[in-house]
Image 1 (cartoon, rainbow, N blue to C red):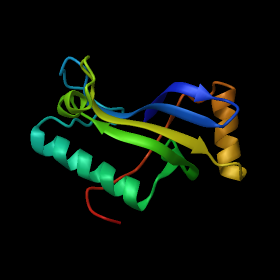
Image 2: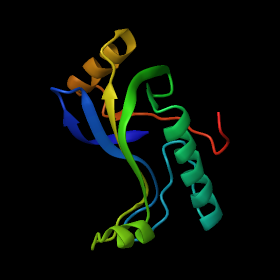
Image 3: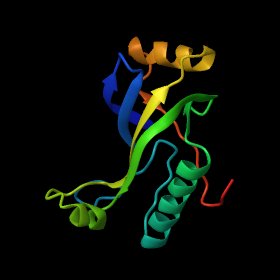
Image 4: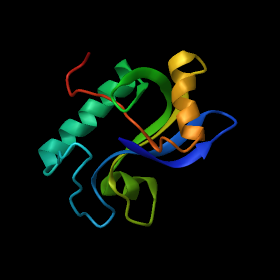
Length: 132
């Protein structure tokens, strides 16, 4: 589940960490489902799943219940190594930072209304390390 770090109400857009395996200090994070990505192989599988998601889907869902409520507008899989390569001086979490725009149709509009009313502060994405 992605907790919103920024909300643009005019554009129906949100940004935040879609997944973190480790915080900026390198500490393990347990996700909302109780899952962990605890070693280099698992982090590589997460990154591959995210690349497949970006290539094949880019759809957002509302709590893994209502699918296709929005679309990915920007994203990056971050790691300390990538942060160094980008010249980012401070430590960053390992994970996925993403931005989404809610669709202006029935399911997208309903999900966006929940965000605007602060009834929802999170959204979901679904990915697999295997191409879809």
